[in-house]
Image (cartoon, rainbow, N blue to C red; front, side, top):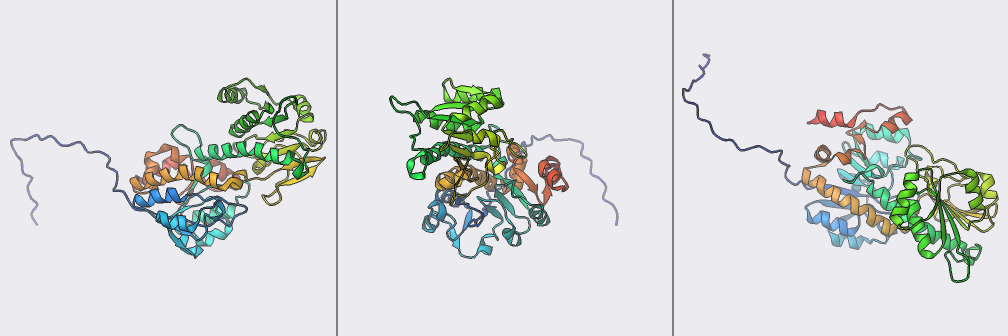
Length: 404
């Protein structure tokens, strides 16, 4: 076959071409599944009926397992009115390409997971097993963890909301256990005219500490805050807007303050491993009988040596005459508020993923989202987890770049 000779034109005509932009794919209807949580004490649900309504009106489908919102007092009827489809088979919900859970993936979920599924759920480091990660890697799952999701202001919105709930709840719980009905000391938390205010010691000046201090001050208690970061103590004072008694963690001073307080709150965070133990058994034994310890950081090991995990059914135990409240999942006790807070973060995220034509595309545009991804199409992209379980680590940015 003879090759065609190239045509040569003597006069070139230059035309202006339109600029081509990175066009977003057409809004793709996604299918989102919400299972009913069977994990330990999980009362929250990740999307409220209002959020489901917004997703449905934007062209997405939502499948929800029967009674998934029951514990947070969202009825099936509320969901069907919002446009969701109720299913009674657990396996049916797991067929959705995108799963939204309010509890971590547990072993019972593994057989139901689909290939290439996207899962948005919390990740509880204390109960995570290598087996779960390996199975999810086998199924090439993309997994996003709540706690590590960042927003545009570089903060963690869901952790922040849950910490605000826990912090505010701490004082309500303390007030309850100081009352005579619960064999407490019979002290009113706060201050009334002519009687010295109740003393509250808060260890940790993060968000939990700040909201606990806010609630205690509003009740009229006298509040003392300990933290090793002077910056956090300063931020707490600025946010609350008044001078407060603050100190770095100095054991002798801490022991002295605990001796005379009615309520002690452990609210130290830890980025990776367990929380530091700052209150020894001896310090607790010197506390006043009938005083209350609330260890909010118990899910990461706790910061009181005497703390042991308790449940919402049996929330307290006594040691040295001191009431210990060590429920790991405090926001779950205020499930409706917590569900709304989670939903407020996830619903806009899902809408954006829909507009971008799926999470894979959204990750390309939204750098903040990358922080929350610990599995991307079966590759482990969280360095801390890879070290802890000795699994192969892959850099997420390289993975994403190689996909384009």
